[in-house]
Image (cartoon, rainbow, N blue to C red; front, side):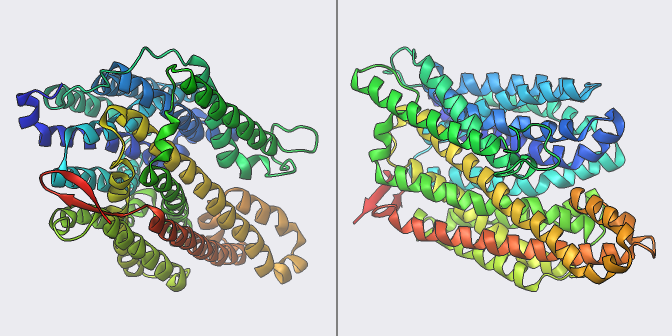
Length: 532
C-alpha cells in the first residue's frame, strides 16, 4: 500500500512506470525494423515472418481485460513485476532463437508479459496521483507512448545496421532488470481490498477468444482476403477467406461475453468486466473516442517508415531518425501540459491535441511528393507529435476520471483494449488504402510500358507483393527504372491517401469528444472535478 516512503518516491515511481510502458511500445517498433535481418539469418518463410510480427499483437490484445481484472484482485504492482519478468525472459529467448517456430513461440510469451504491463502501469498511476499531479503524471505516461513509437525505429535501425537482429530483443533484458528494481523501490502496491475471489474463468476465456478473433481478423484481412480468399493465402475455406468467419465468430463470442458478465453481476458473482462502468458517461464515450483516435494515430505509423525507405531511399537507421520530430513534439507537449493544466481543462487539451494532429497529417498528405525534403516531414511530424502528446495522455485521464479507484485495473484494461482494437482497425484500413493504392497506382502508371513489355508484369507483381521493398533494387537498373519510378509515385500517393484517411478518423474522434459529458476541471487539492 501507499506508505510514506513510497509516497515520497512517487515521482521516481512515475519514471519506473513510464519506462515500463516505453519498453513494450519500443519493442514492437524495433522488431518491425529488424525483420529483414531475421529473414536473412534464420531463413524463415513469409508465413513465419507474418506471425513473428503479429502473434505478439494478437496475444497482447486478447489478454488485456483479463490481466486488468486479476491485477485489481491480487495487486497491480505484483502483476506488473510478473509481466516485466516474463517480458525480459522471453526477450532473452527471442534473442537466442535459431528457427522461426521458436521465435514465434517466444514472441507469444512476450505478448503475455506485455499485456500484464500496459494496464497495470495505467491503473498504478490512477491510484498513486491525484489533482494536478495526476494531470502531469498522465501527460508523461501518454507522451512516452507517442514518443517511443517514434524512437523505436531509430533504436531498431541502429541495432540492426551496426550490430545484429538479436540485440533488438537482447536490449530488453538489462532494461527490465533496472526498471524492475525501480518499481520495487519506488512504486507502492495497490489492490481492490473489497474484491471477491475471482472465479469468472468462463468470462476470461470468452474475452480472450472474442478479442483474439477480432484482432486477428483486423490485422490479417489484407493477407487472407476480406471476403474471398487471397491468391497468396495459405489457409482458406474453399474460395472463401477465413476473415469473415473470424469476424462473425468474434461478434458472436463477444455478445455471449457481455451476456455472461451481465448474468453473473445480477447474481452477485465476480466478473472480468463490471459492465456498470459503462453507465459512466466519461468512461463509455471516452472509450469510443479513444478507439476512433487510435485508428488514426497508430495506422499512419505503418506507412511512413516504408515511404522513407522505399521512396526516399533511406536506410533503416535514417528512416528511424526521420521520425524523431514526432517524439520530440510528444515529449515537449508533456512539459507544456504541466503549465497549461492551471488554465485549461483536460478535455480542452484533448481537443487541442486532436486539432494539431489533424493539421499535421493534412499538411503532410497535401504537400508530400516523391522527392519531398525531410524539412517537410520534420515540420509536419513535429506538429503531429505535439498533438499526440496532448491528446493521448489527457484522453486517458478523462476516461478514468470517474472510475472508482478500486476498479482502476478494470477501467485501465478496458481503455487499453479499446485502443488496441482501434489501432488494429487503423492498421487494417490504412494498410488497405496504402497497399491498394500502391498496386493500382503502379499498374495504371505503367499501362503503356506493360503493353510494350508484357514480360515486366511479373516484376511489377513482385514489387507490389514486397510492399515496395524492391523499389531501390529496380531503380538501379535502367531497364526496370520505369517500374521503380511508377511505384515510388504510387507509394507516395498511398501515403497521401492514408494520411487523409487518418485525419478523417481523428476528425470523427474530435467530434465524439463533445459527448464526454460536462467539462472537466482539475483542482490541485481535489483532483478532477466537474463543471456544469
